[in-house]
Image 1 (cartoon, rainbow over the protein chains, first blue to last red):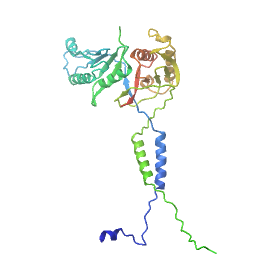
Image 2: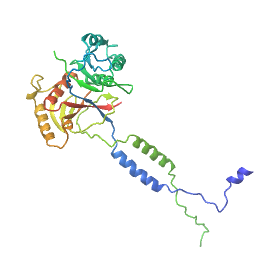
Image 3: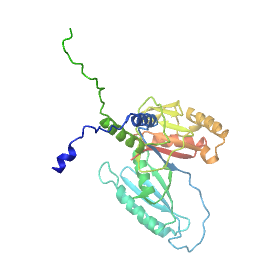
Image 4: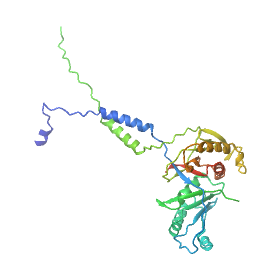
Length: 169
Length: 159
């Protein structure tokens, strides 16, 4: 049979051995180098900056030209949202304000906040600043999660300049 | 008299390297995938649990301020103790009177002597335990701002 004839080894045939030892040596050196430079945790940062006051311009600007600053107040029972602007009229700004109560005892309504901020960004595309004002009892982790929501939503840039501030009583 | 024992031909033992090559390949791929040329090295004698975030920004390690549940480090030095969520010997109404403020001012003076641009000079890498309250955090960042570090990089772990 053809198959068995192919499998049969002729007496003068030898197994071809590939020498993998040099390859292993190279691998070992690379693995050691990578292990030395291996970071067990990936550190990233969120930039926060001090707000800069600008002079007010244009009285009758279009909504898409108006720059607003979103104020996110993290309270014990929920998140209060409002907006500031030198360009928009007070009535419009008042309408932008809203409140998101906690979904349960521990979780803030960050999804609702995210979709609302996305709407605001669509209405005022030139806006890029959010001021986060947490209450004293709010833990740092919640502040970071809120910052995340305010900055990006599914890789869409919302308000990348985040400023953190204490509540002035 | 020879007993007629035949001498066997010596054949050197063969090592099967295939499985080892496989392991090394997988290890190499994993390490290459998680490779980072910017490695953060910290030696903190305590436990700090950083929050997780989706941010992709890399850090600049000029001045590092670390806040754990029991201590505050400026670089490698312990500058204050934290007890029950409050910084020991720190008055929120008088941050200039604290050790933290003076150490930060000294650090700022040191940074002024470097060739870094102004934006980098007043930037602080802030690593804070995620369980701490904003009351504690606010006092510390307020002090840092007064000492000449108004810009912060909040250190987080990649999600």
